[in-house]
Length: 153
Image 1 (cartoon, one colour):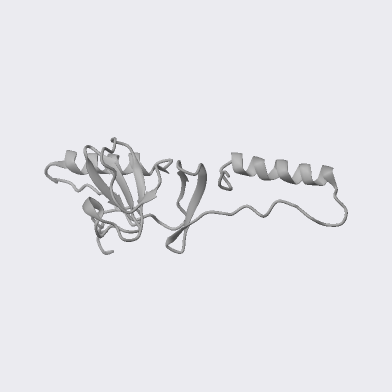
Image 2 (cartoon, rainbow, N blue to C red; image 1 turned 30 degrees about the horizontal axis):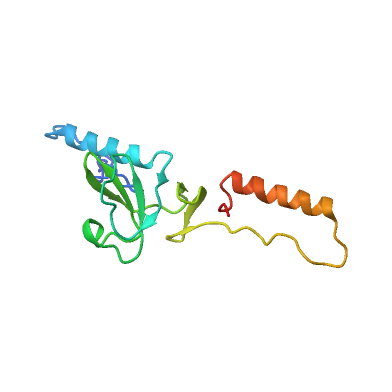
Protein backbone atom coordinates (compact mmCIF):
# COMPACT_ATOMS: atom_id res chain seq x y z
CA UNK A 1 0.00 0.00 0.00
CA UNK A 2 1.33 3.44 -0.85
CA UNK A 3 2.01 6.13 1.72
CA UNK A 4 -0.90 8.45 2.46
CA UNK A 5 -0.82 11.85 0.81
CA UNK A 6 0.04 14.65 3.19
CA UNK A 7 -0.51 18.34 2.58
CA UNK A 8 1.22 21.41 3.86
CA UNK A 9 -0.83 24.07 5.60
CA UNK A 10 -0.20 26.62 2.82
CA UNK A 11 0.64 26.76 -0.86
CA UNK A 12 4.37 26.84 -1.67
CA UNK A 13 4.63 30.08 -3.66
CA UNK A 14 2.44 32.62 -1.87
CA UNK A 15 1.38 30.79 1.32
CA UNK A 16 -2.31 30.72 0.45
CA UNK A 17 -4.02 28.85 3.31
CA UNK A 18 -5.24 25.31 2.67
CA UNK A 19 -8.36 23.72 4.15
CA UNK A 20 -8.72 20.33 5.80
CA UNK A 21 -11.71 18.07 6.33
CA UNK A 22 -13.31 18.78 9.67
CA UNK A 23 -11.43 22.05 10.06
CA UNK A 24 -13.27 24.53 12.27
CA UNK A 25 -13.83 28.13 11.18
CA UNK A 26 -13.05 27.38 7.53
CA UNK A 27 -14.40 30.79 6.56
CA UNK A 28 -11.34 32.45 8.19
CA UNK A 29 -8.97 30.46 6.01
CA UNK A 30 -11.07 30.87 2.87
CA UNK A 31 -11.35 34.64 3.39
CA UNK A 32 -7.60 34.93 4.02
CA UNK A 33 -6.99 33.06 0.77
CA UNK A 34 -9.38 35.36 -1.09
CA UNK A 35 -7.64 38.44 0.33
CA UNK A 36 -4.26 37.15 -0.80
CA UNK A 37 -5.56 36.17 -4.24
CA UNK A 38 -7.19 39.60 -4.60
CA UNK A 39 -3.91 41.33 -3.74
CA UNK A 40 -1.74 39.18 -6.01
CA UNK A 41 -3.87 38.81 -9.15
CA UNK A 42 -2.73 41.38 -11.69
CA UNK A 43 -0.75 43.00 -8.89
CA UNK A 44 -0.08 46.73 -8.97
CA UNK A 45 1.79 48.67 -6.31
CA UNK A 46 1.28 52.30 -5.45
CA UNK A 47 5.07 52.72 -5.05
CA UNK A 48 8.00 51.44 -3.00
CA UNK A 49 8.42 52.92 0.46
CA UNK A 50 9.77 52.05 3.91
CA UNK A 51 6.88 53.24 6.08
CA UNK A 52 3.14 52.72 5.77
CA UNK A 53 0.97 55.54 4.42
CA UNK A 54 -1.24 57.42 6.87
CA UNK A 55 -4.59 56.55 5.29
CA UNK A 56 -4.34 53.49 3.03
CA UNK A 57 -7.41 52.25 1.19
CA UNK A 58 -8.37 48.60 1.12
CA UNK A 59 -6.96 47.03 -2.03
CA UNK A 60 -3.83 49.20 -2.17
CA UNK A 61 -0.42 47.53 -2.17
CA UNK A 62 3.14 48.81 -1.71
CA UNK A 63 6.57 47.25 -2.10
CA UNK A 64 8.22 47.50 1.30
CA UNK A 65 11.66 49.11 0.98
CA UNK A 66 14.75 48.37 3.04
CA UNK A 67 14.63 49.81 6.56
CA UNK A 68 10.88 49.30 7.00
CA UNK A 69 9.38 50.99 10.03
CA UNK A 70 6.10 51.33 11.91
CA UNK A 71 3.53 48.65 11.09
CA UNK A 72 5.90 47.44 8.36
CA UNK A 73 8.93 46.88 10.65
CA UNK A 74 10.66 43.61 9.76
CA UNK A 75 8.79 43.29 6.45
CA UNK A 76 11.44 44.70 4.06
CA UNK A 77 11.32 43.09 0.62
CA UNK A 78 7.69 42.02 0.93
CA UNK A 79 4.49 43.36 -0.54
CA UNK A 80 2.30 45.19 1.97
CA UNK A 81 -1.34 44.69 0.98
CA UNK A 82 -4.05 46.64 2.81
CA UNK A 83 -7.01 44.25 2.94
CA UNK A 84 -9.93 44.17 5.32
CA UNK A 85 -8.60 47.16 7.28
CA UNK A 86 -5.29 45.49 8.10
CA UNK A 87 -1.90 44.76 6.56
CA UNK A 88 -1.18 41.43 4.89
CA UNK A 89 2.45 40.81 3.93
CA UNK A 90 3.47 38.58 1.05
CA UNK A 91 6.98 37.57 0.03
CA UNK A 92 6.99 37.97 -3.76
CA UNK A 93 8.16 35.00 -5.82
CA UNK A 94 10.76 35.19 -8.57
CA UNK A 95 9.08 35.68 -11.94
CA UNK A 96 6.30 37.82 -10.48
CA UNK A 97 5.50 40.87 -12.62
CA UNK A 98 3.79 43.96 -11.22
CA UNK A 99 2.90 47.47 -12.29
CA UNK A 100 4.47 50.30 -10.31
CA UNK A 101 1.76 52.97 -10.53
CA UNK A 102 4.17 55.71 -9.41
CA UNK A 103 6.42 55.21 -12.45
CA UNK A 104 3.94 53.60 -14.84
CA UNK A 105 6.49 50.85 -15.36
CA UNK A 106 6.18 47.07 -15.31
CA UNK A 107 8.80 45.49 -13.05
CA UNK A 108 9.57 41.87 -12.28
CA UNK A 109 11.10 39.89 -9.47
CA UNK A 110 14.41 38.26 -10.35
CA UNK A 111 16.88 36.81 -7.86
CA UNK A 112 14.95 38.21 -4.90
CA UNK A 113 14.95 41.83 -6.12
CA UNK A 114 12.69 43.99 -8.27
CA UNK A 115 14.18 44.70 -11.67
CA UNK A 116 13.10 47.44 -14.02
CA UNK A 117 14.54 47.79 -17.51
CA UNK A 118 16.23 51.08 -18.31
CA UNK A 119 15.90 52.86 -21.61
CA UNK A 120 18.95 53.13 -23.84
CA UNK A 121 20.32 56.60 -24.44
CA UNK A 122 18.62 58.47 -27.23
CA UNK A 123 20.73 58.85 -30.36
CA UNK A 124 22.85 61.98 -30.56
CA UNK A 125 26.07 63.24 -32.08
CA UNK A 126 27.88 61.65 -35.00
CA UNK A 127 29.15 63.15 -38.18
CA UNK A 128 26.14 62.30 -40.33
CA UNK A 129 22.72 62.85 -38.86
CA UNK A 130 20.05 60.58 -40.26
CA UNK A 131 16.88 62.32 -39.10
CA UNK A 132 14.53 59.56 -40.24
CA UNK A 133 16.49 56.91 -38.28
CA UNK A 134 16.55 59.12 -35.19
CA UNK A 135 12.82 59.79 -35.45
CA UNK A 136 12.16 56.07 -35.76
CA UNK A 137 14.33 55.25 -32.75
CA UNK A 138 12.73 58.01 -30.67
CA UNK A 139 9.25 56.77 -31.63
CA UNK A 140 10.25 53.21 -30.69
CA UNK A 141 11.57 54.38 -27.32
CA UNK A 142 8.34 56.31 -26.67
CA UNK A 143 6.22 53.27 -27.53
CA UNK A 144 8.27 51.14 -25.12
CA UNK A 145 7.70 53.76 -22.41
CA UNK A 146 3.97 53.81 -23.20
CA UNK A 147 3.90 50.00 -22.86
CA UNK A 148 5.47 50.24 -19.40
CA UNK A 149 8.77 48.68 -20.47
CA UNK A 150 10.83 51.78 -19.64
CA UNK A 151 10.05 54.41 -17.04
CA UNK A 152 8.48 57.61 -18.30
CA UNK A 153 10.71 60.64 -18.28
